[in-house]
Image (cartoon, rainbow, N blue to C red; front, top):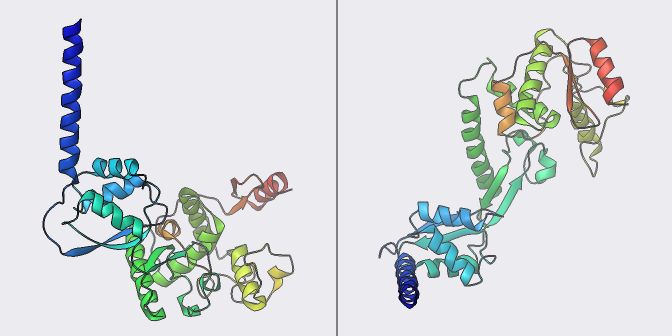
Length: 305
């Protein structure tokens, strides 16, 4: 019995020694290359994601050693978001210390899908409506408005190209952004957006007005400049004279009404075909579709009253 206990102790000691050696080795710098490279940590990133990114970018030897040191040193929740200049010549511990001190004096600009230019910032020209791609951008504090817009536009072009791949619809890029901006305000889930895109195409094909409330909200709010945009429309609003009134006018409005995200752009190029002409969002948050006006009225009576 004593012999078994002794063996167990020896094994435990060896495991501990090997663990210490393993962790100590993984704490060492990747190389002696002191050249620095940018490393960006987005807001609210989890420790495991940061560790994985550091490893894949060849800044640390082992993600788990990074996590171990971050937790045991009490710095798990002290790592900041931002842009950092790191090198392969820093040990894991040294990199943790740099990350908790904070990055450069850049700032995060977050654009939310469905926002109009005025909701993002009054500094941006209205000509950018629809092209301020929703995302989080790390902006150097010295950037001019033109440089910021260039960063956003580059991202838009990249995402637009991705969304357009293998398109099943023949639509101009300009019209695609306009239609995507309507869809962005009409639906939330990716598949629902594809269904709505198919329905709006159906309306365009038969010469029917698109009847999108958001386009009227955009027209109304462009005149009134309210504190809170996108409030429900009234029956009087549907009679307003505006090229954005998709109840009175046929076809697409003249320009986008908000910033559409990737899912909305993808939906325009990859709509789900159906025979539906009408749709509503019920009070329960679900979407309901109809092929005829009678079916549509039944849905309105059942799910909106």
